[in-house]
View 1 (spheres, helix red, strand yellow):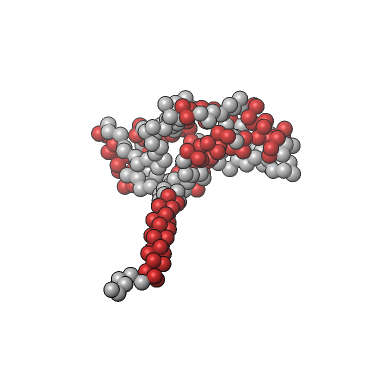
View 2 (cartoon, rainbow, N blue to C red):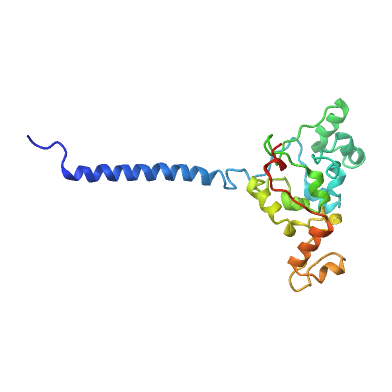
Length: 232
């Protein structure tokens, strides 16, 4: 009786199992890698808003401090979104007839808030407190990037658990004097001691490592890494 399967078929069967296994592993690995890429996270993609609000103009050109609009960032877990009334305090006199601001005026007349689209939206099971970070010297730019250079704000950092834990385990490089948290052009001293520290002569003489330690001490920073810190 002739053989149905020849010896080479054993080799082909083993090869197909190896190729199939590697293919499945590659597919899973590819998915796990993709979801961690900026493309999958929607980073660098400007978030469309109901009204064109140019942060560059308001922060850089007009010199408006972040806290003028995000008024609860120092006292609340949430940074806060400016009310239409706050917008109209300026725009009832400036560009008060601009078609671009029609929705702002209508919101004020109807007494209905503008529904803005979130740029950074952490999961509901994650607790994040803006106030504690700002009051400990973590600059806005550390998490939000150079908003003062964005025509339309986009997600600049991953804000993943790994991102947060890396900072909590080594907070020094991310700290600055508390009064500089909204200054997006602030830079820490460089090793030569000639870095910009915006008038703080005692800081300019320190190298980055020593400066980081000083900020940890001055700002009384004691970051936690336990699960219950963020998952409550």
